[in-house]
Length: 311
View 1 (tube, rainbow, N blue to C red):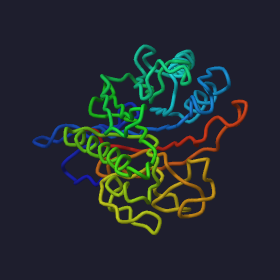
View 2: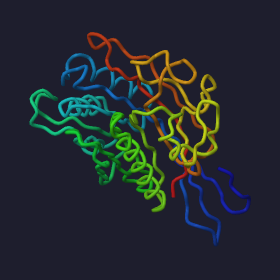
View 3: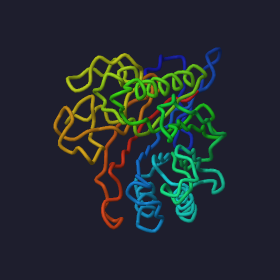
């Protein structure tokens, strides 16, 4: 972010920078750096709702070891969510042990074959206390699972909102289903932006960066051989990866040799609006642990670091 001289003074405060206005200028803003962590854990598909096969330990250790400020989960069962709460709480990771996580059901409880009859869903974890969650149901795709977008602000910084979502899979008979959901998420992010919020949004979009249906999210400044024709306003934290510039590193373990660069397929993302990014940003994906009696997921963990401006 370029700051005009004479308009602001920058003060370092507790790891963040408060951009304090000079007399007669706009209200103060905060500039702060956050580590983001995202994983589709396949809580039912691979773990059959288990909380004891290694998944909870692997995920919680990764969150702590990577210094995550925010963690986003997709396809997590309710029992696994509660086990993650217990693990992170016991290790002293959250500042407020009673207010650091949110869950939203996508696949309803009452189905014995899914999550032991409990809910499957998406979840957020934050090292700092969170405010009231924002819960959105994405456009319907005709399936039992109802896709959601879950967001929550920080209590101390209510204009910083962390979100997660899990977009439906592609339906050749109804390609509009997945496109409509992606557009809906984009529009909700823009509504939050118009209200003065800075959003950090992570999740599984079941789409590659180069797909036309992602063009409305990616910033038009992202224009490479591997991801072009973009019309949106968001950068993905790994879109500067020089091995596949504009696209990033693969996250889908089922297609490790595909993608436009032949280095695998990326379908998991962490997005921030371009004019809210202050300075550099970065992203990476991590090898899948095999400490769960085999592979711990069919997705790689996505991590990223970004400095943002918050009103």
